[in-house]
Length: 634
Image (cartoon, rainbow, N blue to C red):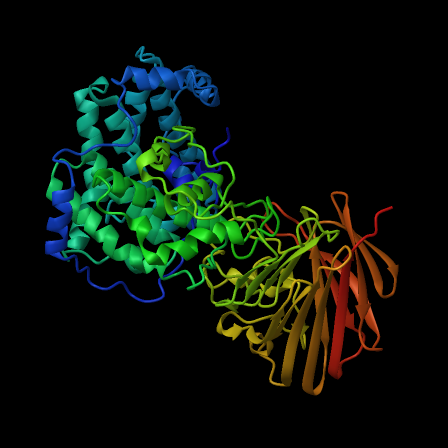
């Protein structure tokens, strides 16, 4: 069984996948930490005297012998066995410097990810076999990891202060390493040499626990992510608290860490709109909210069910985002820094569904105990913790409307002949992991996004700098939105889609947005975009742009696709992608226009084609309407 949650939560595993590795700047400075000592004392009374990790230690042979027979885990021992024949890769110090030299972050992350990724499999393999065959390599790996100059990513260490030992900060990767090592120590226990266990504890103290205590004591500048309302908050706190609950012998120490998580994760939850929209995109929902789920279950387990962060009223709407953002099952819009292949993680959906009684999935069976990660058992839910759904499994329904941000997912009626589903985006240009995409949209034919938002590029130093919107994937050029008087959209919260009207019925959904604020054009008097999604027949989407200027100006709109274009007539296009095809009819109100294509080439897995529909002459006012329908069955 492929564990999608593991893929999304890359930093727990130390893999080199690009999800979750961004370092967005805080919207405001972090306040001085204020953890209530009385609350910490209450939490201390909930905790056991001794720390404890996830799952069962290697000495519980009934547990591990059963897992060794689990066919879902067949690949772990063979992979770990192959590593026994290979030398351990050295810490890639030269690759660490790549980021400051040329902005490349991928080479280091791949090399270091290979080192870190071995620990999980080696430990799991040893627990399954219990023959001591992997212990030598485990000791060597732990000692090597603990001897690294820093656990922080180079992308988060731009001045190399961590690398040079001038300072120690906590980031996504350093906190994840702490939890990973703590869990390895818990599972193997006395199987590890005393010297290695001391080395492990010393490194976790140095790189994570002590800096965190310094922050809580007000002796060090607070890490900005404590007050962040995006994935960094939940990820770092989950990792730090998970490691402390597993490794810290001092119950009061553990209680302070948990109290900090209880306090500061409220800021993470505030980053969702009241109706649960995650502007970071579904990939970061997996990563950030997924870590919040990990944290909540780990704390719930450590406190014997007395403290349940998942039971907060602010959690329910974000928990439903992964289900509701699906255009159709297995397809999501790649809004923000998101892959076109990103999907809500099945284990997160099952977990919140079982814990909160949401009825999101039909098969609410138990979860796999381990797949690739030592942290997987945090997702297990004892029978006593499960809550029955109050209704049958939820279907996606005709629509999901995130009215607080202006995002609509429109779907066909069940059993109808309609083959089209859509994702229509209002939003603004200061969202987390923002793309300048006010007014963007996705059109799916059956299960394929033939017209799409192309998603994220490979992260480099440019991605999170003042040069971010030089990227044609991140600026509005790479999105199906207008170019106004030759200008693209501007970043910032003032560039937004203001909802003029919405009308939703079983037959059709209509959205009207005023998007003029997204363009810094002094001659622009008005610009509205109207979406009309009709479910009749095989489905239809109309996108109408109406613009007015104080003097004639250039104007164009665009379509974005991975597919191939065939122009059948001056106003008729056929676009096909992976066997799914749609027809586009263009109406410019009698004005002449041209159709031109441009392949967008950036460092990304997708090279989309931009199809520009441009007025042949400047105009003082104009209306361009594109009507999109599935190609009729042959």
